Length: 356
Image 1 (cartoon, rainbow, N blue to C red):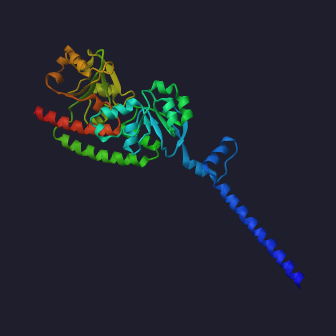
Image 2: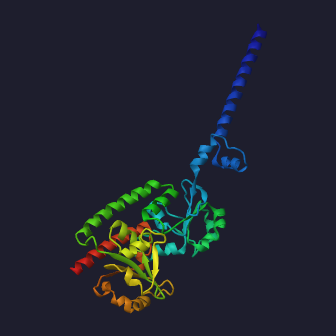
Image 3: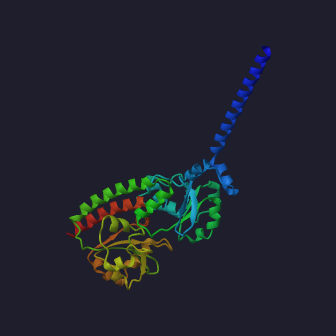
């Protein structure tokens, strides 16, 4: 009888141990299936196929983005530490602040009377005139965004891409809305672009109503800028200087020659001479002066306005020139464009009231 009891106890103990070992094995399998993104990445790098359970986790961490130069770059789905040499204003418009930007980008926010009061550049590291490799490395970014015509940066693309995933985007080939949607998509917040565009469009519609009873449908407008060495730039709707707000949002017309040369074109600007300038001048002109060479805007303006060709233009003799500050109208980011639109409406209402 005692022998039977010992035998039964032994069997029961054996069954219990078997069940415990099976449970431990199940837990081990579950922990392995829920491996971290780091372990999944390691297995991929070694040439081994990742487990089925780990793949969805990795996919939610990264995605593939095809940039302006055709590269397929694996970028974070929701990047947190972005460096830029352009597009800072686009990121800020969708609620994403880069951790670093070039001096040129930061100066636009400091020099603009529209943007400086907002203090948007605070806390953004200055990366120098060109995006410094050393500073970039020290900031540990998870994404770098470069402008396609930034020659100094692009020649170091391979070096940047070793620091963080690096994408190259065009500037001046898309409308502001298209560019904003692209940036918001890269930043992982596409819905924020739609929210920003909706509020902007509501304002634009109200402004168009204000101007409709003041400006006739056939009145034309030229956006131009005086440069050193008697060079003159005519701008279309894709390259800052208030063109997107003027032509796309307020829906005012450009002269036929401007429409043909630069509107919806890449590049959306054209360099012309003083002699050919009259061909591009509309009924009204938005003028800025930009001495990018010596920084003497006042001296350049005086020389330009004394040129016989300029002084003979009907738009000049009839006081149909609207001059704007280049620091306010140079940027083509959404935040600047919204402010430019507000300023344009005010300037137009004042000018047309005076012309009555």
